[in-house]
Image (cartoon, rainbow, N blue to C red):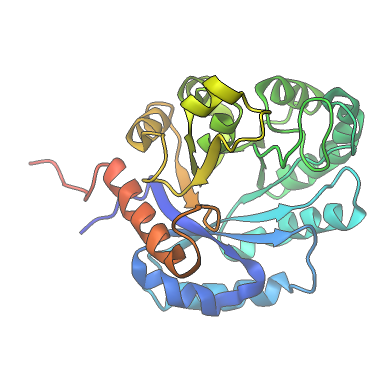
Length: 295
């Protein structure tokens, strides 16, 4: 049966876990994987990893793919993070992919606009390096606990920041790694935002959120009461059928890779139970099994 490969449904996998982890979870039906690094390469040999991963994928009949490499550090303040971005850009083709994702970085404890000169300096060079190799770069929209005024990690968490970033570095191969979770956390309706920014969205993290509106009404968001939880798709507030419809109407092709390890219920021994539920839920939201038209 033909798969719907215009939008693949997969998950994140730590690069340090290697091909062995992929071999264990591929049989569950994941169609793509973002291989992630935290802050720096930390001893990961990308060439060796690519050969091992490609072998693991080939063993499955090559139905699953690597969607992207992810490097989540602060490239505006860490040279190690910049070097990791370079290494990912230079080696992502070995994984059969053309996309590197991560945080845009941030000048620590400074308002977002203060980081723009550093962003321009770092990512003008990285964007050109990537373009020369046919590689795209995408910034995750996670605030990492930061605000407009202060933070440690990432400026790419609000549309106003995106507009400034893409004005500073007007490169067609720069885009977003988007998910509705972080927008719901900020009390933003994610679907109108998705429609507006669809042409800049290169990759999605499959992560949702549950917002307790009654808590917000009574206590606000700074009243010391938990008002939102990150959720695996299928357990949160977002209608992912709407998300995928917007993606297809906007011409998006690529992957939605589940970002697990956050759900307050489906965690620990239930982690993979939740992820596989999310995988199957997203496949249903994609329209279910592919059915060929009559001839």
